[in-house]
Every structure is written in C-alpha cells, then in structure tokens.
Length: 60
Image (cartoon, rainbow, N blue to C red):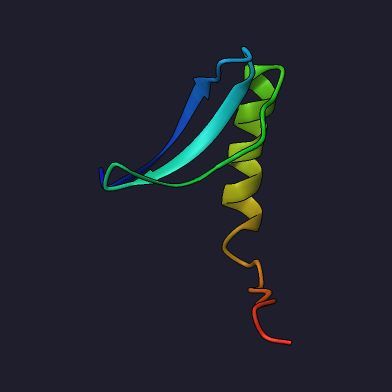
C-alpha cells in the first residue's frame, strides 16, 4: 500500500499519528495520552479531511 496511518509512541511516551505516502511522512499529529485518542484522531481526519477547505495564508 502506498499510503497509511501509523500510530507510534514518542520519546515522551505519548501516542502520535503520522500519515505516510510511499514511506515519506506527510504529516504527524500532536501527542495523545491514550492510544484510543490517537485512533479517534485518525477517524476524525478520515471523516472531516476530504471536505476540508484550503486556507492559503501565503498571500496578503
């Protein structure tokens, strides 16, 4: 599979989610204290991400 979500523990012991495409990390989340919260973040991204607008703040 070319893309996937990964749940991992950081050095502080928190759970984080990263999204990888062709083994390149595209983004990672904040740290969560429970794995369940990290899984909820994945579900939220899947549900809300496809319809999210782009906010281009590079132009004034």
